[in-house]
Length: 269
Image 1 (tube, helix red, strand yellow):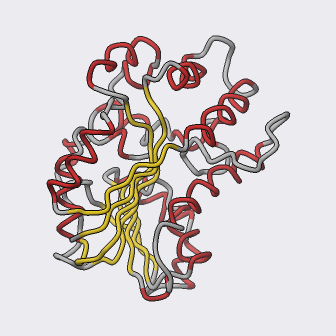
Image 2 (cartoon, rainbow, N blue to C red):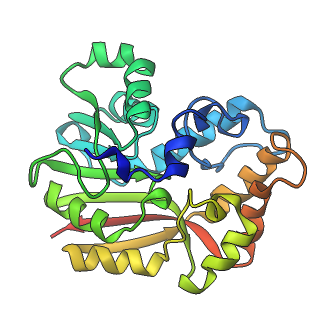
């Protein structure tokens, strides 16, 4: 794979900077979390870890039982903790974590060495891109991505590649934050440093669901889960980032209707 495809900000953030070490991403997971049922009056690092695990669980519940028969892959797996959780808790037949960043794949293999040794034929981590996945046609029963799609430069290729690697009837589940439309991209860049620096891309939700339909998916749904994400995240950030840090503007961006967190699911025709 051509590593020159990795944007400089993505290469730095998930390479030498290792975002997983930031206090706002306690525990090695790298997502904003599902704070449903978590007391956010004085959230602890343990609460933060639980929120990130719960976001994975919400996504993984999108796949039908019996899960023991399903072969899955995660696109943008980062340090691979979510893929290991998927295998160990949901008992899928096999899970492969895929990431475009070689440092992340190396970290995933190191962090999850015990799980890899325990399940050598069922858990794996591999290099790959959202539009260039390391699987044959129709090889997977399910594909999921947790807070990674905002880094993909475009989503049309991701939709097409997802359709290629999923068998007919296979399931796709993607959760991340999407913009409300192309017209808000500039405002998001003003509010949020991750958009200004090019780390995040303001993908409109409607454009992605249209891409999925065009790629051969049906039963395309988009569920807003912003109420489970943004208030809890902001409360945790209050204690972990400096006053006035741009990350606190995610809540305002959501409240203003510029973006929202969604769980998008679809079925391969």
